[in-house]
Image 1 (cartoon, rainbow, N blue to C red):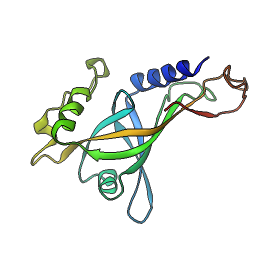
Image 2 (cartoon, rainbow, N blue to C red; image 1 turned 180 degrees about the vertical axis):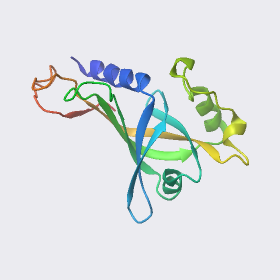
Image 3 (cartoon, rainbow, N blue to C red; image 1 turned 90 degrees about the horizontal axis):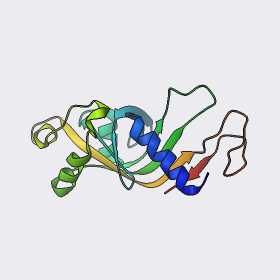
Length: 162
């Protein structure tokens, strides 16, 4: 396995999983985690739609710093597959909104309903958000109690890929 293989592994996880866990904090630092349907886009953008009244949306309005995890919950125990990322989240407008609508909700095979500009602007309670990750890690793939082929480590460990 190479570094390029790890990046490909990360993208395979992003393209096959539909939900991420978004971690936010309120102004007092109290954490909050929310599952949201998302669509990934290169290089490391994550898009989702949420109501502005949702707790995570209110938190992001005050503290845009966030982290997220995308993981495959279908694998057997001790076969973890996950991508971790950190960055800042923002409501999209203007040209950024147009680009975001080109990526969200992703290909039709993901099963989500297309979103229009009217769905996420004006009097709508919903907005399109994006995190552009500044740091991305992947859980190095390996079998239980087996070392990974890249690092020789027989325990869970994350590798920075961006």
